[in-house]
Amino acid sequence: MKKSIITTSILFIIAIILIESGALNALVMFLLMGQIPGTSYSIPASGMLALLSATTLLITAGIITAKTQHNTTIRRLIKKHLAHKSRMPRRRFGQI
Image 1 (cartoon, helix red, strand yellow):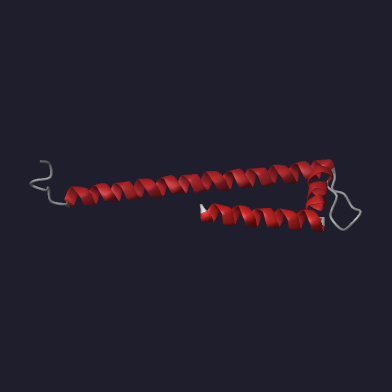
Image 2 (cartoon, helix red, strand yellow):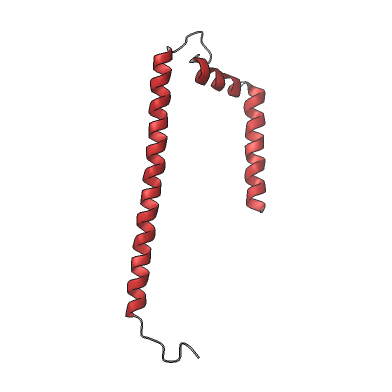
């Protein structure tokens, strides 16, 4: 509970800082219109589409890779645990 309150507070403070500094507005303008912050230049629509598509692809690939690695680790640990359990001697009076 304490950890979630601290995390929420930090995110709230970061959001306030981004809103007050104008960085959030610049980020939204970049994502929606392709306007480069601090300049009067804009990226063409096809360039923004390619950039957002590549970013989405990389994020999705990263999530899939992390989940696959997690599943592989869990399976390895289960296999190791079962092998260790099978090597252990059976208890004589395990159930009464």
